[in-house]
Image (cartoon, rainbow, N blue to C red; front, side):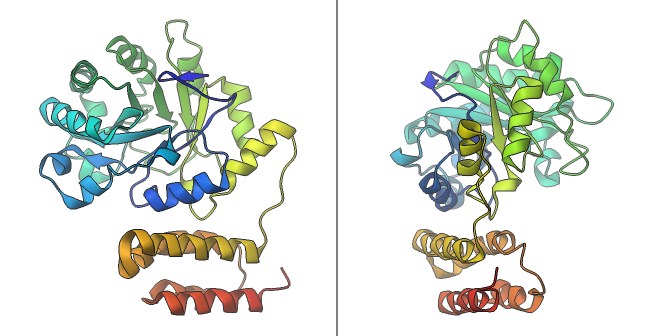
Length: 327
């Protein structure tokens, strides 16, 4: 598959951009395990970039081992998005992705993210002006529509292609659904099979296993798939999915000891990147998922999620291995 001038393997697997998840630490962990073909940064506010916000600017830091990687930006005016995209170019990502899909209220209510699905002319204006302003390839991530009564992704896809994007990722829900209900891939399949569509179509939503990943390729003909929430605390899913694609064999779930060693490695890297307090706070969401399968471990989890010391967290994780060593 050709994606933004980059040759990818058959059935490419993308890591979705997720706020407070796909930071440089998590990208490092996913890449070191293997199987991920394209990665995205966390989404970055155009206004944050333009106002030199430390958090926003830190998100622009990328490394060569992460390539191919895109920086995703969001905003609600063409002017701010163009200015931000021009600054993003200096970070030298492989492509720039525009976020027209985030459903979070504080973003959507300002007309950014999926909020722009209520103003398609503005969506197209922003996209066209960013495409014209930068030398890098531009891609878009969006949703099926604003709500059940406005699933207009087929029309939007054609218009976005016409203004110059080189790939489109579609999350198979409306903005009104947020992350609830079942993802409906039917319209993604229709977009992909539209003879007017020439750009790669990447499908996203509810892919949580290698079998489900293969099903989406087989049933809807997408050019690539994007994994999001299913990767949290489960970074091996990319490697397992790639192995399944290549061999038809399902690899066994990592043992508890393997998961905990992975969590400890993730923690140590997070602390290196963000300091002890920042690294621990970032890891709390991941810890819940790494240890999700443990029975009767509420008390230990609570200790883990309230600890402010790396040493204490390591001791708790080691105790968990001892307690559940039979698994």
